[in-house]
Image 1 (cartoon, rainbow, N blue to C red):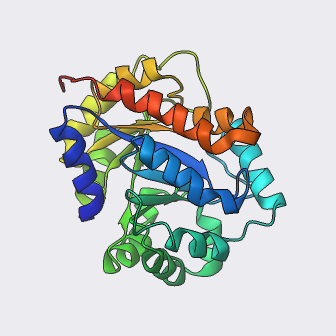
Image 2 (cartoon, helix red, strand yellow):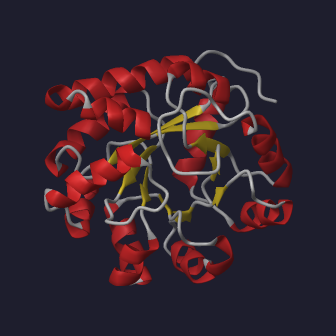
Length: 268
């Protein structure tokens, strides 16, 4: 098990709250702002930070994250440059995890990609379009280098699948709160609680819920049942509406989320 990720969840649990996991797109608004953005969300209370590697065909991303990736790619953001910038951040930041798609990983080569991740100090990777049943080679490579391959589960996941990812996964389980792509939504899916309970019944990995969690109120609701709360599109959209003050905007937004999940909670 990846120790830094596990420690982040243990620390949050000891403080009577869920772990907060905000998402940033590398290269949006610009890659040279990533260090300041990571520092801002860290100081605001992030426990783990998810960094998206921009890709031209992000199948799991909704319009907000697609637009951010498009801007990042138009800015000339390259994976090698992301590795270089991130390597400067990891000694002082919370655990960082990448979200990427399998095409860039295959293009670079699994072993090369994961080796660069580990050298940069990244603790885990999420690959939405890599089916878990076909991920054995990637799991072997990540395990050998101490990187967590973080599994995703959806409301449609079978109990057999949940048991497999709890047995073979690392870091935490990324629970997708709805069927569909990422995005800002007015209400939470009614099935979130049932999905969290099913994942927890299958094994011991912490459960962090994402996709569609947009407000402090929604984050607080999810924090009462899950071990972690992931917020992506809502944060990136906030940055899009505050381009000139993106760093301060990121701090303020994540601070509000942290205040929402730090209220003592009773885990189901």
